[in-house]
Length: 67
Image 1 (tube, rainbow, N blue to C red):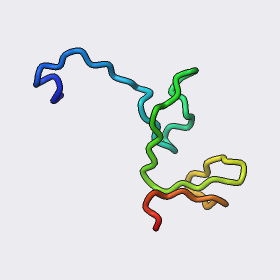
Image 2 (cartoon, rainbow, N blue to C red):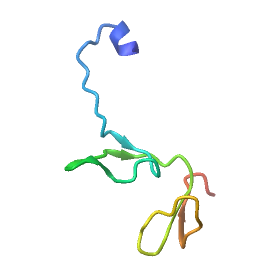
Image 3 (cartoon, one colour):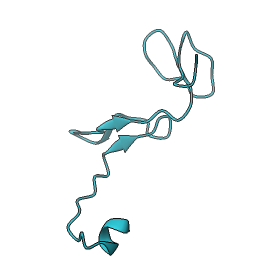
């Protein structure tokens, strides 16, 4: 909106710009269109094989807020 107001009319929107797991269940928006950014809003747990475990405690935990 701000870009349009200041006169920038030609803007390419990229629906495959950012994945937000666990809501995006794949790292591709569609075949051969990978997301450019993976945005982790909160901590996620994974098992040893790398499968994400939403709402469960796994062997491996990633949390950008952990100290």
